[in-house]
Length: 483
Ligand SMILES: *Cc1c(COP(=O)(O)O)cnc(C)c1O
Image 1 (cartoon, rainbow, N blue to C red):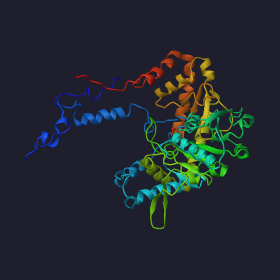
Image 2 (image 1 turned 180 degrees about the vertical axis):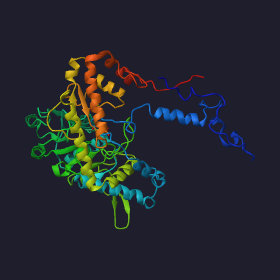
Image 3 (image 1 turned 30 degrees about the horizontal axis):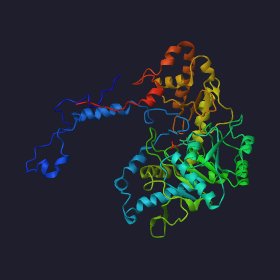
Image 4 (image 1 turned 45 degrees about the vertical axis):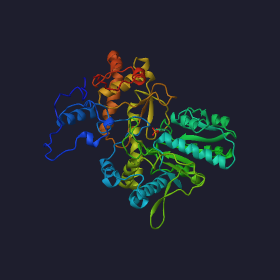
């Protein structure tokens, strides 16, 4: 199916709207605009009536899969449904029309929202300080690692190394590197959690800290957390939590209570704001008392009478964002938190865990499990068995699109061969989970019947199987019409 470009719909003389002729004297262009800025020919804009413009973009809006269209079990990404009330609140002109340079006195409501969101996130995670500045999870990681650096500088510790488990998200070692550390990879044990012997073998005075994802990217709870905390203390190292997976924890346990010193929270994942395609995110970083003094300025604070931006942090690592945050995301997260409420978060986490385990139980006789330990909000299948019969994880993922389902994350985490990482989130019904399971079982049956069809899937999408490497490296997204 070829989707015409808006330029190809253009017909000379078609107009989006027609206004009555101006019946008052007009200045000419030359009287308004300096001569050197006046076009010598008309701008090359498509000429399309308004109804066709609307139809064109409505068509385009459903070509790609998205969470408002159907199930999106993309592991580690928490593609939950984003309630529309969040959008409505964020689009309130009182928020929308704020300018970051506005005087504090005229932005008290926005500052109050930021303050209260910070307090709520501290309560949910069990930490005593927070910055809302980072614009994404990886940006939060970098901020957290710079805080760890600062802590060691202030205490005159000579530290060079961050430990990262081999199940970690690729952003972890990348962020540590950008923050000026070297990284050492720690193996996972057969249960899918940190191999304590390997951790001990890599532990020495050079270690500045360890980044841990809990539950880890296999969806398994790191149950040796207390022992890991003690090991870190033995070398004055800090413990960082990659909090992208908070969906499995909130309302149940708090990372601050588990012994972490610092964590980032992906508001665009667990706190229900639309994300994907690199769109705006928000990765607040919460810290305990050890790191509070180093938080990026400004920190939102309050007196009895007003909210204000505090720069009174002499040991701050400085700004990590030009202004204060991706504010619109904060508004959405705030609306979501107020709507779900204290009790609600526990139910969200429990439902996310139950949904993942339901799918796992239905599929585990047909697909291998990466690891057999109990699962939290997501789990990882291995398509090794299917690969031997001729269909790889990639083929299965592509074929799922023909069932109107977004594929799971594939080939990650790296420690599971032919990995299919499935995160249903809490927002799906049993019927939807069943439809997904049935699609997965049917694809497994198709392997014996029509391999060719699987290798060339998807068949029902606007574009079929792409050469993924070429598509990523030679992006062709420009429309260029030579005149
Ligand atoms: C998504 C994710 C990140 C990175 O978050 P971004 O907002 O995409 O930068 C880091 N770690 C884990 C485990 C994640 O799932």
